[in-house]
Image 1: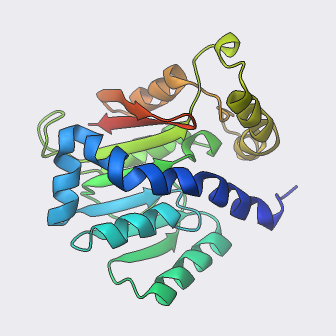
Image 2 (image 1 turned 90 degrees about the vertical axis):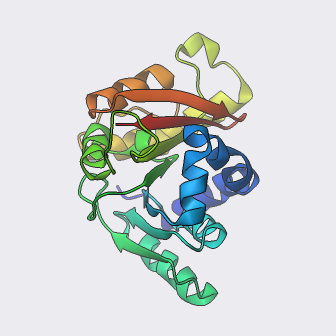
Amino acid sequence: MDHNHLMAEGFAEFFKSGYMGNLIEKWIPLIDGGNVLQNLKKGAKVADVGCGFGITTLMMAKEYPNSSFIGFDFDKEAIKKANDSVKKEGINNVKFEVSLASEFPGSDYDFITFFDCLHDMGDPEGALTHVRNVIKKDDRGSSNSGTCMIVEPFAQNELENNINPVASTFYAASALICVPNSLAFDGPALGAQAGENKIKDIVMRGGFSIFKRVTETPLNIVYEVKP
């Protein structure tokens, strides 16, 4: 059964305030010791994977006009709404395309992002393997290689440490939305409370060598990933 079309709008609004309060001012400046921020100011090539309505993509495009942004999502209606927003706001350094996370086009990306979507995917390992293939490469882990930022719902690794109101909300939403979505594509059903260890395992199996937690909020954990 397909989800109601209003579900995507509800989730977009749920996470939007957290992105508005943290993405530009706090999260991006911390990634790769500030190198990502400097690259974005100078001019970087960016892919926002699983972008939905493009809230995060548009935020970054407005803040960093010298960089180019492409948002990818498999939901045609979400991409249509995202492109409508581009036209309405007259932003010329961003576009949106329909694509699976494991197949999006392009290469030599300086910065690739996942916002609260990796755990929903049918093939998160395939998505990260593809990212590893298309991200900019230089010396192992150097500041000249591309960087991937993964934002996931806040979760501890063990169930007994996730007994709190926020985790309960995420577990409920995950049971109805995140897990079924992954299972519909024969995926691993990581769920919204996967925890850092499971995310790291997926990242490493995707072929990356560097994974670390950069920061967190009551709702999210931000990870930095490099080749």
